Structure formats: C-alpha cells, structure tokens
Image 1: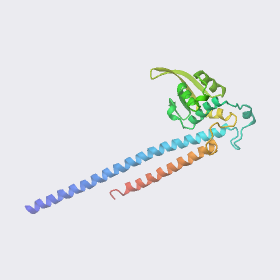
Image 2: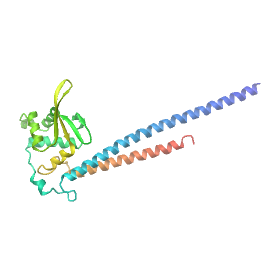
Image 3: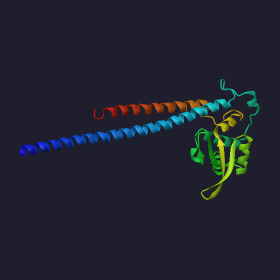
Image 4: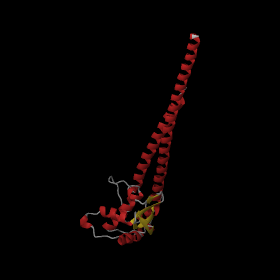
Length: 230
C-alpha cells in the first residue's frame, strides 16, 4: 500500500513539475513576444519618420528649381525678396517648424501641414528678438509677413480653452518652397555651415542606423524565442 501511494505521489510530483516548467516556458514566450511587439512598433514609427525626412529632402531639392545641379533658376532669382531682421525672425521660426524642431508650439501637426495659433507664432518670433529690437509687432503684422513671402496658409478663428484664437493652417512643402525664394536661399543655417539637404541626409542616416539596431534586437529575440522549450 505504501509503495502504491509512493508511486502515485511520484507521478503527481512529476506532473506538477512538468506543469511548472510549461508555465515558465509560456510566461517566458509571452514576455519575449511582448518585447518583439514593442520593438516592431518602434521600428514602424522610425520608418514613418524616415519617409517623412525623405519627402522633406526631395521637396527641398525641388524648391531650388533644378534638382540636378541644386541651383535656382533665373525665374526663381527674379522673385527673391530680401527680408528685414523682423521678417527674417518669422521665416526662421517657420523653417524650424517645417524641420520638426518646434512641435510643442503646434495646435495640430501632420506630414503635409501644421496648425499654429497666431499668438503662439508671435510669441516664438518675439523670443528670437532682443527686447531692444522688438517694435511691438502685432498679429496683423504677422499676417502681412506671411502674405508678403507667399506662405500658403488658411486663417480661421477657433475657440481654444474658452478663448477665441486666430489659427494659421500652413502647408509645409509650400512653405519650404517659398522660403527658397528668399535672398540667400534657406533662412535657417546650421552652425557648422552645412546646407539643409545635408542636414536631412545626416538625420536620415541616423534614423537608418536606429532602424538597423531595432532589426538586430528583433532578430536576437526571435532566435531566443525559438529556443525556449527546445
């Protein structure tokens, strides 16, 4: 009788042990699958950002008027307008927004356009000017600057946080094209003197390296997943 009970207990213990091992394997697999899912989501976002950078670089090249040599055409040069330092501050802010540097200012943002309140745009412009050079530019002045330099936009009024605000809806590609017509080409210059396209290339290379690193991590986890329970 004792031997029979011992055998039964042994079988039960063995069964419990086997269930515990299987449970650990299931948990481990779920953990790895979750990590893979998170990495694949991050990769998808990076791919979208890479595509956005490619689009911006192409649009920037097209805006030069000659996608082969990168030189502006005679027609473009005839339309160049030299801004004063106050107008240049507006153009600097707009170019920075198009390059994805001031997303926190925006009311809405998509690949093709962004929406910003006149108040937010004006405040950012004022920040770039020393107080001694600020001349009390108002929102009407801001609208005139956008019109002067051919910045394609739609202006409308919207209630935001219980206040009535003027909102500008601005097309990114058209804005970059308009900025190229300003004397000297791109308004915003990199500190190291590199052109806008060169900056896009560096950002694209960095994003590509990020995607490659994510791919490597995903591959390693998939290999680890295949070994669990084997």
